[in-house]
Image (cartoon, rainbow, N blue to C red; front, side):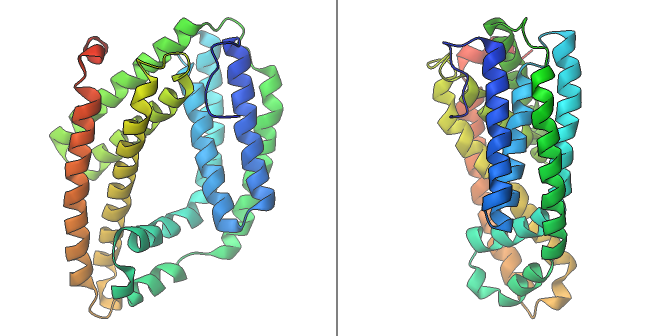
Length: 276
């Protein structure tokens, strides 16, 4: 089952089945994948679930209440796993975005920060929380939902992303760009969910939103890596300055790509009326 809402099925059933599928895939990852891959997959599917309930948040008082509870629940799962995921993200930023072979001391330092014992315990706890979430879906009150509620939720998502973009470029700091990343990620997830219901208006945005979300993620990870090595520079055997120089060059490339992506996605006249 792909991450999308079919126009041939009732909205409530779509939402419930899509959420169940995401939880079941995450539980399968816990049971069958290696630890690091399982953690990555569980966090990813929790983000998808949170995007699902955020899409219907404004429909009724019941969906607002459901969103608040389920969003907190699945955010808790991600936070349980963040202790081991964050050091791994810095390591991935170094190995995937920079020439890691030039910085062996930095690689070793980052690998030493990944606590595998804590990861195993966190994964077991996450599995229990996922099972609890799966059991609750049968009691969700979604029957009044209509297609117009999904479109309203998508409009809210677009508006939040647009305003986050304005704030990020106006302020230029890490916090605002991190918020932009989250809003763009929501837009990407919501576009994937809605692409079969509105293929021309929404579906065609998926590819570009994916690229923009990826660039923003790389930008944030690299900023965090740069801050980390600046703080621990005395342990890096002369690697600090070359690493910072290479990271800065990559950050400039990402910034240019992010600006182009935002211009492409948020300058479209079709969506101008949704910005207010």
